[in-house]
Structure formats: structure tokens, C-alpha cells
Image 1 (cartoon, one colour):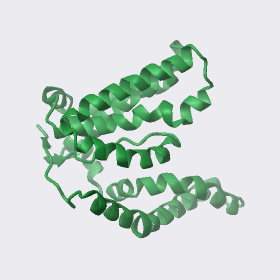
Image 2 (image 1 turned 135 degrees about the horizontal axis):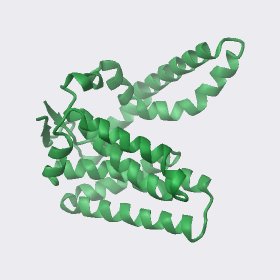
Image 3 (image 1 turned 90 degrees about the vertical axis):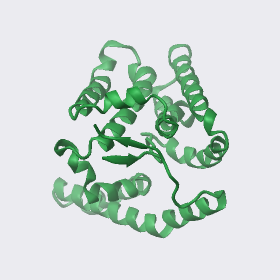
Length: 243
């Protein structure tokens, strides 16, 4: 199955994503004009954030709450997905991508490594999550996304092509924004109902508001941004082909 990987982005798990949105527009316009060096620039930035975060944790013992939510300590997680997209667009590391997508069960290996990192790492290494987890997990997620896209034609991963999942992915940024505003009020309004019904209502309300916001606000601005930046509506991109 042929796939396009031009816009692969890995979302961060913190409030830093909003800060990255404004920064990212100008940063990637800068990289677009220097696409040949984009991979190197991204890799260096990611490495510098790793070092910076390690110094904060092991030298200055900065509180984990700051490390978790600050833009400067989570920038690398957002850049990893961009690096993956740049590498694929430039045709870099073909043997690596081919190897990691060569068997339908390999995503399970990646998921296993993610689970070990998330649930076991802190048991053996002091501040593992803040220093090593935040470095390794985005890399694993980037690989997993590529694996799932390339292997989506296999029966085991065919569910990743469901329309409902594609729709949720399309409105994911709006979901990220509005879940912080909607989940708790809906839960409070339905406090007399069973927890399961509270959850269902909160999720449906969040999806509804996010969808309205996407089509009424986000999509028009994305089109305007693309027009102002001179980017074509559709551009050719490299393809990965499932074995």
C-alpha cells in the first residue's frame, strides 16, 4: 500500500503544543527554504533539548511539574515527528524504515517497548521519565505511526483506516484544546448520573464542539495560512510501500 508522509507530526502530551503552534509556523517556513539541511537542524535541536533537560533534572533538580509542562523542556517531542517526516521526504534511512515495517507484528514490538518505558523505567532509574522517557517515547511513537500507516493494509491493522479514526485525527488539535474546557463542566452537570454516562456525554460533547471549531475556525485559517505562505494545496511527496 502506498502512503504519503509529508505531514507526519507527533503531538506532544503537554500545554507546550499551543506555544509550538505560533513558533512552528515561522520555524518551518525557515526550514522549507533549507530543506536539504532540515534533518540536521532538527536532529541537533532535539539533542540539545535532551542535554538541557538532563542538566535541569540531574544538576539543578528542577521540579518534574515544570519539566512536564514547559515548552522548552518538551520541544524535542514535537520536533521528532517533524524529523521523521523530513527523513522520509528526503528518502533518508531507507533501510531502517524498510526493516521496521517489514512484518505485520513489528508494531507490537514498538508498543511493548513503549509500555516498558512508561511503566517500568521509573522503577529502576531516578527521574527516568523526565530525562530518558521523554526522549525515547517520542521516537518510538514516530516509528509506530509509520509502521501503522505502512502496514494498514494488513488485517491486523486495518482498523487504522476506519473513517471515524481518520475524522478524530483530523480534529485532534481541536479535541486537545476543548477537552480542557468541556470535560469537567459536563461531568459536573451530569453528576447525578452514573459515571459511564458522564464519560459518554463528556466525550460526545467534546467531539461535537471540536468538530464545529475545526470546520468553522481551524480549517479556514489553515487554508489562509497556506495561501499566505505560498504553499500549494497539494504537493507531491515520497511514498513508503508496504512489503
